[in-house]
Image (cartoon, rainbow, N blue to C red; front, side, top):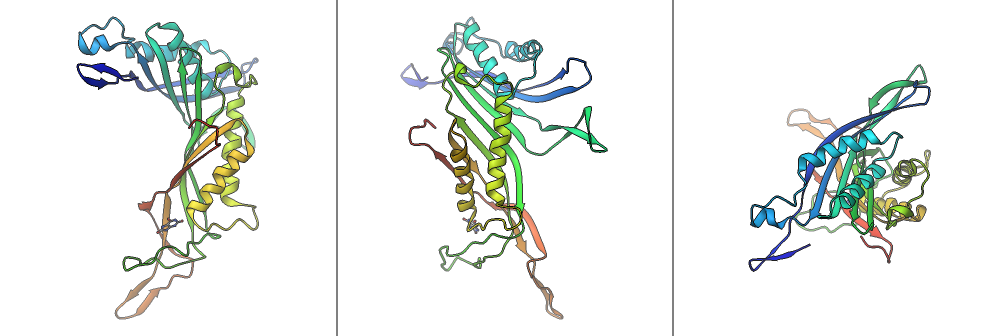
Amino acid sequence: MAKELEGFNFEQRHGKARVRVGRVWRSKDGCRHFMVEWNVNISLLSNCVAAYVRDDNSDIVATDTMKNTVYVKAKECSEQLSAEEFAILLGKHFTSFYPQVFTARVKIVEKPWERISVNGQPHEHGFKLGSEKHTTEAIVQKSGVLQLTSGVEGLSLLKTTQSGFEGFIRDKYTALPETRERMLATEVTASWRYSYESVSSIPQKSLYLNEQYLNVKKALVDAFFGPPERGVYSASVQSTLLQMAKAVLGRFSDISSVKLKMPNIHFLPVNISSKDHGSIVKFDDDVYLPTDEPHGSIEASLSRFWSKM
Ligand SMILES: O=c1[nH]c(=O)c2[nH]c(=O)[nH]c2[nH]1
């Protein structure tokens, strides 16, 4: 919220970034362990302009206190919960406990620890790090109004065929040949906004938002690849991105918008020739030079007409 200050517009917020917390829960018999590792970012909008203008810190929630609160609340959560639920819980705490705080924004990135299997059997307390990360952001107002976004980060996908790029603008700067046969590789960053506008409207089912995260991720991946045997042709990253976004909004009625960032990570055809021996390596859709620098950067968002992005 902007404030008029000595003839200027002034906006401020403060918080604690990168608070790392690990939490373990045990089954009733104590044998099976469940764990999460979260990186929590808190940002509070509060009435503390006096600290900026008058050296008066009396309305400041110390960022050190915010950090401690993460551990206190993690301790209090005796049942396993999703990153979304924890973000909401923290947001509710800051906005209800402190009269000065009117909005809390809590972002969490969850490390992809996955239960390991040994000889095909899920281990009771062993985990290994997977690849893509589960993200979430909860913006909680003092009134109880909620904006909830979830997402995935670092979801690397690649297909070796069923991709092309044709019909683009050709001019004196253009060297790229048209093709109906290329590799398609990307690292998806996606975020989707839930339509729940208050904490009480979220389904109470335990870990519902973790399930939803896995379902959305599956919808994105399935749309990227198509059926296992035939796949699905991609006319561009742009076209595939829209198919993926539509799959999410088509399938999940509690999601009002989705944002996708999909770099085009190039696998360049390798052709090598020498003056003496002519062609040494002739590209036949087989040998590539993978490179992520430079890469194409393609992003778009899709929302329902009535959604607030
Ligand atoms: O799928 C693509 N989209 C582009 O916009 C683009 N530009 C480019 O050089 N290659 C590609 N591929």
